[in-house]
Amino acid sequence: MTDLILKKINEIQDPDIGIGIVDLGLVYDLKADDDIIEITMTLTTPACPLAGNFEKQVKEKLAYEQKKIHVTFTFDPPWSMERISEETRLKLGIMI
Image (cartoon, rainbow, N blue to C red; front, side, top):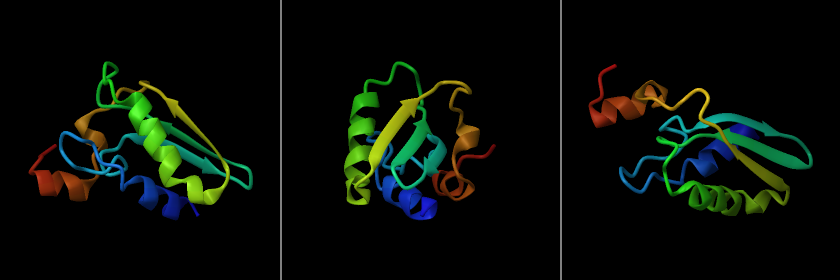
């Protein structure tokens, strides 16, 4: 179930670079049970004005689940390029 949820929310792309939020490493944690889906995620910067937009998109992507969806943003630990998936780093030519 969590794999399907991650796949679905990875369809949400960072508008600046067109990479899915899961591949970018913005999703820190996912818990799902019979009643609720809880997602802990971050943004590339605390000043990002898109937090509300990302939360809305996550809820829209998971509406088919017909469960309560709770999105929490955290900046601890702060996002870094090391969180980007290896496959995505290769596509972007990022060497870490």
